[in-house]
Image (cartoon, rainbow, N blue to C red; front, top):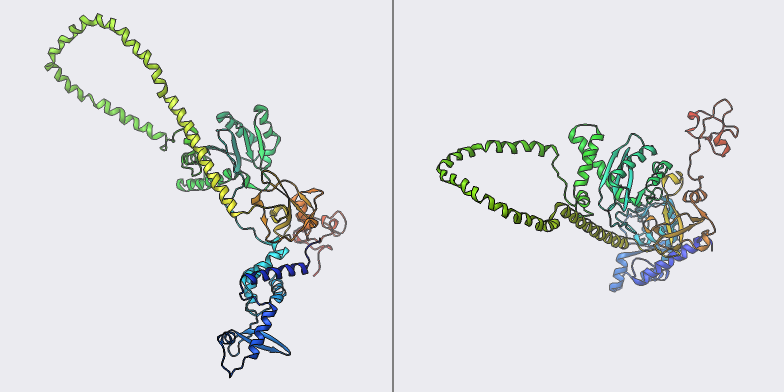
Length: 548
């Protein structure tokens, strides 16, 4: 079966309207009902006594005679333009005419256009037609789906997974469990400099089991992969091109860091962002994180960070020493000893039993040896270790709870796709030309056990798997198995280029010079059989320009 013809779409549209009319007899008027109302109105005798139903018809409708044809219109006052009631069977052609007249306009545009002449074209009827228009499906803007996720990434141990990204010439690494981030300023995006900073961070905190990044050249270069020579167990994974949701955690942290850095520069009246980056790193790690229900510092080290700058405690210590120097007022109490002079007899009393304590001292040494085992459970190191284990366990529980909420919300927003469903896939700007639509239509041909979808389009099966939040389901099935190709694999850009009316992604321009420019295959535009444009050879005139 080829693409649905106009007759197929009209039949499907009419069938949907009849279903709605059967459920609720509203303003939609099938042909039989339309003719019946006209017959009742024409048969009504204005002088005779009327029934309540006839009064209702006369108050709402009016019959307009156009030659030999009777039209049903809304009751009007003098000198008003007639507003017609459309038959259900004619609704498709009426909406189609208005849709093309508004340039495939949206619902509100079409409502304004149709209400000028028709009284019973509803919003629901217009929405049904728009869902059957293939061009509207291709060009529609995708609704925002914030907070939706298909399969959240969960880690149980520190260092299991780290995410790295570049933000306006600054490098950022974040541990996925504790959300602890390390910020490093860079002078460029060269892979060698990024590798040097990663090496420094790994030698400080240890290399993670998995290092996740995007597909930037600074992360995919060979100098980065050479880090595996030092850490053979290090696994490097890269997200899908132009899909930052693959590492949404670090992308969200990037936004916070930008805002915090701007605020720090404003508070300190400076442009030295390299210095501010250190303060922002401390502020970010010591502040509360809603995802893990504590600060990243506490999740990593088992206790909250000291919020005060380290200079303040040092300056506070001298005053604490001064009181001890002032406490010699105890010296006046030295006056008391004269009154306690009888206690001077104590030394000889102590001298005589001084030998006895020597025999008593050995038992006094034994208790410390017995107390040592009891000190081990309360040692600061063991307490800190227990706090770290407890904090990270609670962090994992908080992230698990957050992941369950996100998945539940995503399933409520996004319905699961089935094999055979029609879908629209957004096309990134870099993969389409200015004359191409925003979306490409396809059909689901396979779903694996991880809910990853394989989608086929006219030119073939799109390379890679798609998750549910990367496409939208069509309301109606406009493509069938015969409309897509499943015997070859193509990239998204190639698929768009083959369906494009303007040649697909890319903007050809030339810099030809000379009096005979743009007349041979040496000219890029002439070779591609396209006309030169305003970007070619400084907008100078040539023989290959379109003449108006």
